[in-house]
Image 1 (tube, rainbow, N blue to C red):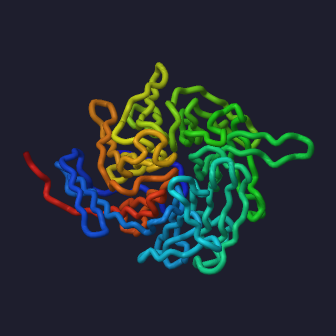
Image 2: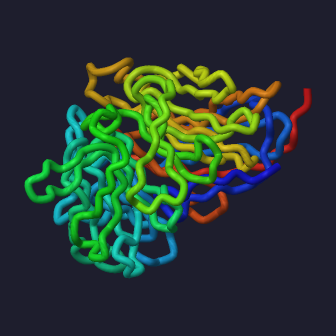
Image 3: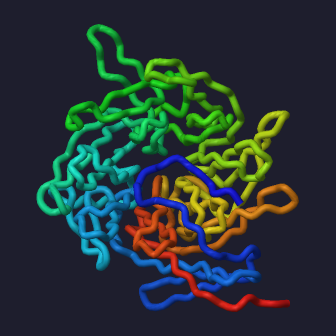
Length: 423
């Protein structure tokens, strides 16, 4: 089987791993041990239980985004959420801002996406924070080993869309921030607005350079736009930009000034992050998306006759964050998502107070079609607007970090080897 390749996104430590695993779902066991929840899935043909231990790092609403990085340079991956970071392995909270912020779960935070990156190239992991939609994005300069005063630096004054991402879109080895924004004013000309790529300038402490890809007519570039992703839709070796109404094709030999062509496509309703992969193995790339405020997880199949949308799951509502990662190490990317509990408060959206679940959906293939098997990870944490899948404890297995109105959580993957069952 050919190994999967995906764009390098968010944390450098995020990676795909290969481990032995089974092919068929046999059962699910949920074990509650004091403050630790073990969500376990057994496989009928394989050798491993895919298991997650959940630890709550903080019970306060700090952020709806989270990042993973070694902030104190001790060789261990830590977790950051908004204005605080939590040091592994005991997860002691440390301030990033002068005062750690706490928000009312009936309202919203000012932290929708968090990214770990060495912005100024000094060797220390900094934290990028995309704020409330329409407001600022900034980065916190790590003072070194996470101790001391972190310096706040503006990236852009306007941050539109609720699913910005940080990836190397143009293949130059540097990651760009993808979101809706506007260019800086230039004399008497009105600044252009739209979906854009942002990079630090030669002086990373100044506002970042903005390159508009799509104009303001694109709904995804609106303040509360939903649905945004990247991937090589046409398999030309270049990364394209996806929104719910279609995709922007990256031109060959892009010098930073060339126009991107828009291709209209029906990628469904308002959603969270969008991902690209050949899910059915037929040689062309497809798209997955999940409903931000209603119900549904879908895959959009690319066919010779156009795009066809298929439902993956309707188990729960408000799947406002979606990641693609090979959880069981079988070489196929699985889906990880959950419920954004109280996204618009206790009376908003569909089933706002239903259990705040986190699931991974195992990708298998049957008769030339993808089949996703749902596995419960936890039922009282959920997701925010962005989360991280990364090998946090460096054991070769992918873990999950989330932050939302329920608090900050670390879902650690463990494996229990068992004999194959027979019928």
